[in-house]
Amino acid sequence: MKSTPPQERVCLLTGGGYPFRRDALSGWCRTLVEGLRRYRFDLLTVTDREPPSTPAYPLPLNVRSAAAVRIGRAVGRERRRGDHNETGRNAAHLLCRGLAEGRGLAEGRGLAEGRGLAEGRGLAEGRGRFAGGLRGLAELAAERVDPLANVPLADLLMEAWRGVPSTADEPTPPRLGARDARTAATLLKHALGALTVSLPQTDLVHCVGGTTPLLSALAGRWRAGVPLLLTEARAPVARHRPAEERLSPAVRAVLRRFRGAVARTGYAEAGLIAPLSAFHHGYALRHGAAAARLVQVPAGVDPSEYPIAGEPESGQPTVVWAGSGGPDSGLTALLAAFEHVAAALPGAVLHLVGVTPAHEDHCVEQVERSGLGRAVRLHPLPADPRDRYTWGLVVAHVPGPADPPYRLIEAMMSGRAVVGVDVGPAAETLGDAGVLVQPDEPAELAIAIVGLLRAPTRRRQLGDAARRRALTHFTNDRVVRVYGALYADLAGPPVAPANAVELALTIPAPRTTPPATLRWLSEEDR
Image (cartoon, rainbow, N blue to C red; front, side):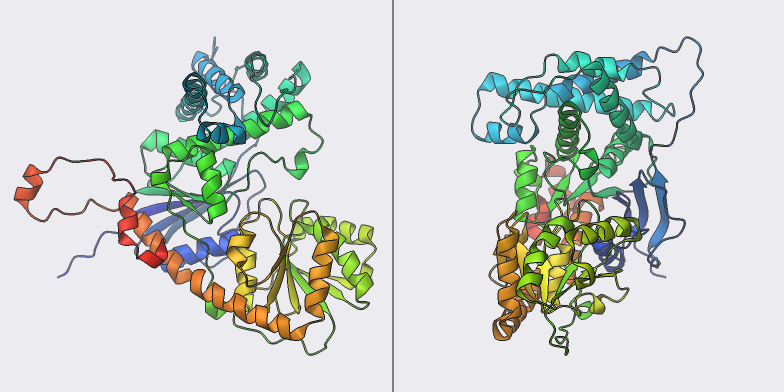
């Protein structure tokens, strides 16, 4: 009887997404899980919101478990007599020192431009202190429910910040007073709650997302020594999120440096890093990722799920935009541009597809402020991808700062003409198969949209070109094939030697540069 080949176990770790939420990133994760049937998956999503009770997607047979963990709940006070938690205090001291000495985005640029040896050594020491402190807290979290119990984090942060150096991004670092230090400490302690998440026992952790899941992935790696694969799809950490608008400049600076330091630590610990684009590839390099560990894997979609759809027969000038409708979704810039479109083409309609229930009120409020009224229609994300872009003659691609390029690829595969904003990886993804304008230029975006609405022949030509480009570069089968090689490189058993004599004469060597994975990919895949 033939023995069944072993199946490597993979923990797919996300930040509040698959399989509990339907969005572009979740759809990508679903493709990976369903395509790599030889692997057994434990799906884990870490979120600071109330997790859903049931998955939003049906789970294939190679999924062993699916769980959502919420961080940030009030931690029960640990009652330990005479507990001064010196271990936690020392780790927090290191973390705060490294955080204050971090350089954000300017760090990578400065090193690349050849700063002095002494300064470079100082930067490396800062990174080492932060990673050492973070690791100390992660290991302590395996022993106690609150590794920062009885630790004066605000005082340690304020003390470290007194010696914070200037950077190219911050020539004059903002002063961190006692009140700001308490606020920053509260936010950092909330974020560091991700270190307490227990990961299932697997052969590989594949982290997809931003700071929160990466913290959990790092803690799991340090506690169990499991290989780590990162899919890099995040936006630059230098920006602050809409919810942080009311925070002081000093608190925002602390959070920005914290996210940058976590990213750099993740790049140092990961066995392989898979950026979605050259844009994300450059981001990883600027944050200290080793070039030999980077394997660029563009996103993809299933062509059968996005067939070419005929244009609406009404002849009405219509534009479709896909996004959540939240404060960080690009909606505000889109509505500013569509005001010009509606003025130039009376009767034009904007269809907002994929507005989530959590952001519906915000979306409605923004539409009312714009005065566009019935010219804007809201739609939930259709269950059938075929219906996603059928409402519009033109797709407006106006993403939020953190949006990966999935929606753009979907629109291209659907054969729709795309007018977009040149941010992130949009230009390299769309190429010459659409129209791009500079960001923060609503009038220019409107002119481009109106131009295509008035030119049906050019509109169809661009739609056909977008479909061809998507079929050539952005398909699911390619993504699955390359990630299969990445998984095998990190989680699979070592390759058997040709014979015992060769094994006896061979000295084991570390991973070659570039990674062995690159040798398995055909020239067209690189």
